[in-house]
Image 1 (cartoon, one colour):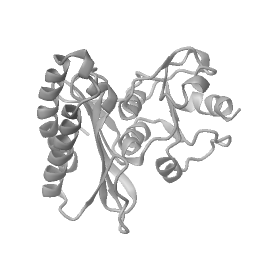
Image 2 (cartoon, one colour; image 1 turned 90 degrees about the vertical axis):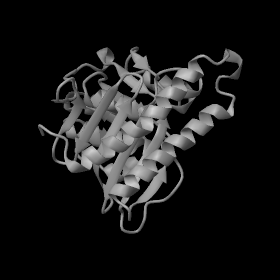
Image 3 (tube, rainbow, N blue to C red; image 1 turned 30 degrees about the vertical axis):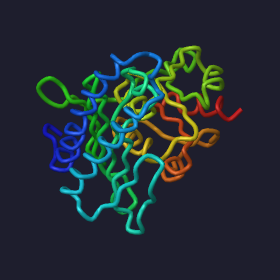
Length: 259
């Protein structure tokens, strides 16, 4: 895909427009007194602004599609909707830390068909469309991304959320808790992380990153799954328990996580 398709152009345009005010708010948060970080209405208002811009812009593109925002909203009967995490890594944002992202996935007929994950402070934007591969926005054009080739779990760099951190340490001592599962999954797709394990994650926080990993040649399973010969993406998406990694690591990590 040497160009951004009309679908991805519409989604990325909405995300970039939402990120303008978000970046401005983040710069202001950085200068607030430490005593009010994470305990003020400023971050909450930023969240609402981002959510509002995304919904307004995406509604211009798909006016009949529903919205599932973070943990709020349900998938409509026809399966056509946008799953949005306006500030994925909200605690980071509220404390003036850069580890947050905007995550948007488009679902059609109950299948995630396109997505964008954007980390505005890092200026990293990741795209994927079902069947067309995963890409990162480069200086001049889109750069194809692929999962890493790590084969040894004990040497893997693993992203985890706090719910599963202790168990992840049984696989490798190289475990990161970034605070944004969407961004972590984008990093698996880009080969910057070898795996992600996470529990209790809302569908809107998983959908975009899952498609990125799949289109980058990766695999996705439920935590605790012992038979990794096949995936059940619907179960993972709505179960909120995820293992995302490459071909070489999938069985090894699954076995360890199942113990």
